Length: 161
Image 1 (cartoon, rainbow, N blue to C red):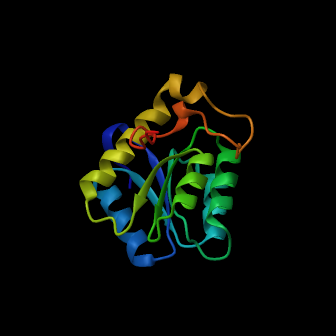
Image 2 (image 1 turned 90 degrees about the vertical axis):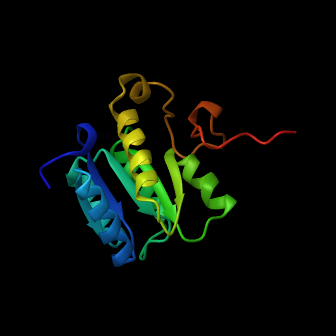
């Protein structure tokens, strides 16, 4: 786990499904990233307190705690960390909540296209390293009632009226 993909990056994968978490971790490791995989909220919060991660990929449904609470706590520890949310059960409500917690992207499982996942991870890590992105547009409190349009990921298009 010492080689780092595309300029490096420490990634934490949080997924209650061991097979999914391990598979995603292996894809990321094989691409050169430093990866830790955890399977529950307690492990996730412990790792983020001591880990110095650049990016977190978190399943919305993690046992023992509301996963959106995990995102909130991770963002409190490191406001610039990049969050990517995954779920088996996409709903508009979970997308909105993920955006409120400043998630960079939202992936629907199964994650069958490794190249797409790697592209999103690479983009997220570039965002993390960008001084302009890290110091522009952060909100003082999370979640807010309104998400500024500039904070919405470019793949989410506004609805026409």
